[in-house]
Amino acid sequence: MAHFSVELPDDVAEALRAVANGIQSSPERLPADAARELLVEHAAHEAAIARGAADVAAGRVVEHGDVMAELRQWAQDLRMRSEA
Image 1 (cartoon, rainbow, N blue to C red):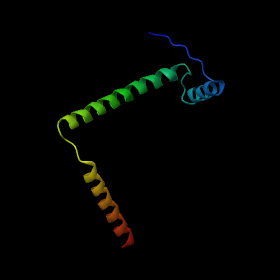
Image 2: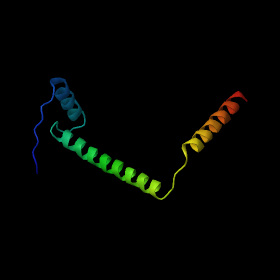
Image 3: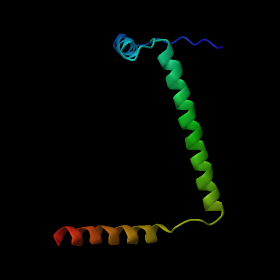
Image 4: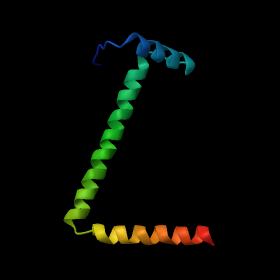
């Protein structure tokens, strides 16, 4: 297991202690948990980018003008329903 050392401002350290106490954990454990979550989110983000790039490469795209026209129509429909 690797060991990292970080310096935190006093207010952040105190808040970390308070959160850890509130969830019955330790201030030392929370950064490791946060790092794990960050890595999972990063991997999901990278996978989403790769899927998007694959869609573009395969031609599965919608032109910007078409999207804007659909959004304008949607907004107009909402306005008409709210006026009725």
